[in-house]
View 1 (cartoon, rainbow, N blue to C red):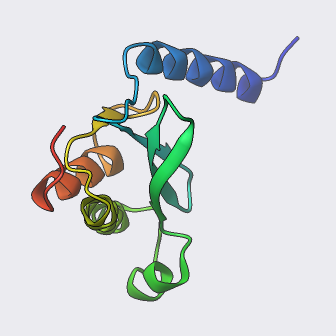
View 2 (tube, one colour; view 1 turned 90 degrees about the vertical axis):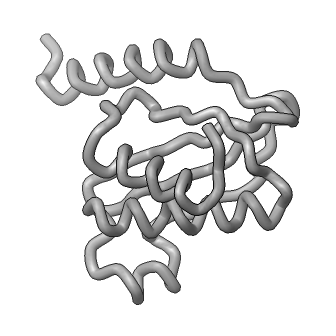
Length: 123
């Protein structure tokens, strides 16, 4: 018998694989991937052809923790969306493929994506 938590993790893993099956990051269009925990949100821009992380941002970083009281809410996600867009644009990346990582496109994921678009990323 497996516990409820194990079943949930298996379902999430299946959703991640299904979403990532259609999203590949290339040198011209790297993948913007999101990981969401209860306390923080993490974002990376990844070039899958070379396997390198080109830019990253999270609410666990010290400068962000000072400006955002709680890293697990919509306000924090919007701040991270703007931050990752600024960092990617500094590195010359304007076009990305959005990988929501199996999470539904609402709440924190949606806020992050909209903030990144407003800051100049296209996806």
